[in-house]
Length: 496
Image 1 (cartoon, rainbow, N blue to C red):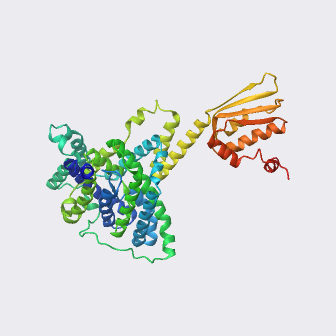
Image 2: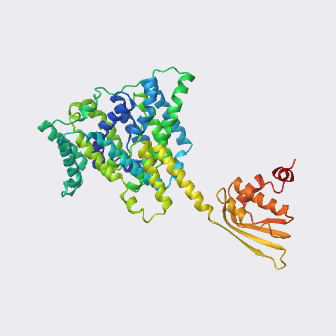
Image 3: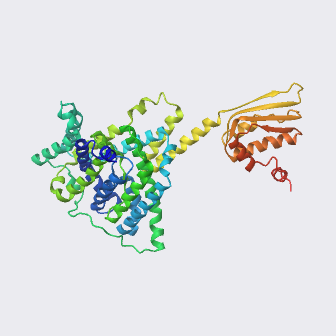
């Protein structure tokens, strides 16, 4: 246990500490911005980010992943806050946490197995585009000083690591933020700072219970929002965990992450925060800055709170241009540039799934809808591809009175019609033998196709023998087939 504790918490102390500080600095303006999107006070997003980051550091299933208040979740809260107020949002946040814990115990995290790589790639690319687009308001209609500071920030981020020794020990995003803040404070140039985003809280969060009546009416109000928040939160968290798994070449426990996200949201709701989930942008910043263990996530949450409460005068001086430079670096690093080069090599179906995911996410700004469309398309392409893997051959007996059909492949809803079309019902035969030893029947559509074939042959006076059904196929055929049930056959053929 001590070795495990050392590995997951204290095996990378220096890099985790520095990475956590960088993430904390980048979290502040985002938490404020997401609070504004949701229509609540900035402190709601900041308290949420603190609570969620700290709790997931202990309870989450993916070390080094950053969870906090997010834009995807904030967009779902707008109507609830506008129509019912903050207290109902806090209640919905608590219910969201409960639903996510239930999802963890139901092992819904394992559903990530059904998300194809092309969907994940599309998700990543769409998120990179959204991160970049989110920086555009800070770069439109501004003075030349902003462009100069942003360019200088990008220069520091990409050139500082080239310096011998020190370039590898200190995260360049942190250097960027510190240097540009000092330049701003000494020059006094007229550009936006973190302080312009909203008032920072001056007290620590306190425990509170949402001031809403515990009635069925309250549940009817918050339940639809809690369902949406829990689904989007888990989906984004699972996708982000998968990406961090690949970046660090380490595994994660998706079901534990579901429970951890639930506990974090309950904690956020009890301390005046909004619901949140994993953040791919901040998680990439953390990993790129050297963060690898749970310590980096804990430090990000703790430093965030300490800075906004006790160092607000300093934090408010950070120019937004510095944070824009960091986020542009994140969007460039997040985007899968290989996916563009692979468009010529990959199958058309893979490219369509990836591009559809990107387009839907970017157009709707809803990650859940984009992933749903991607998974749906991938499933349809897969079903179509597997449905074509069906081969049926036949051989006439020496006396010309019987034919043996050999079926090879998968029979289900996409291949059922091809299965039926492969048989010649006009041929005059005494017997037909259908060998299914190399076939598999998956659903009731396949069973219905077999019924149709047998009944059509019998209607022509041909005796039908079915052989070779494997155990799984035989189970579904015995349960649902009607060709050996006279009453069902008569009803199927229109009899009374």
